[in-house]
Length: 145
Image (cartoon, rainbow, N blue to C red; front, top):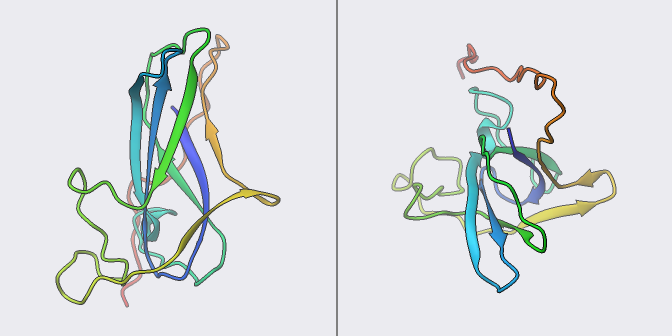
């Protein structure tokens, strides 16, 4: 499966990372190939884990499976944003699960692209062998606060 490994640094306790991949044709048209979203607090499984202010964090955004082929002369466009409203509910970025309890919190989010924090788009390449299993947990027992 395709995924984006997006390294971010933010002054917020929680953000969404939305990634959209488009196929850009030689004539400039751009066609959606895949998209996905990951709430940062759930980056390591189903137990919420808030971000540490301004500390780099790796967010894996699953882009699911596709059988599309990128043609010769085409380019891939990677779009990263913190919202996909109205497609997905807005993250209040204040630590609350849903907006409404407290005011939404504005902040700064940086996508890191170099050094030890290299963001990347990971694409499967057919090799004739089975893909490695995905060992990320589907469910977890979370400690109660």
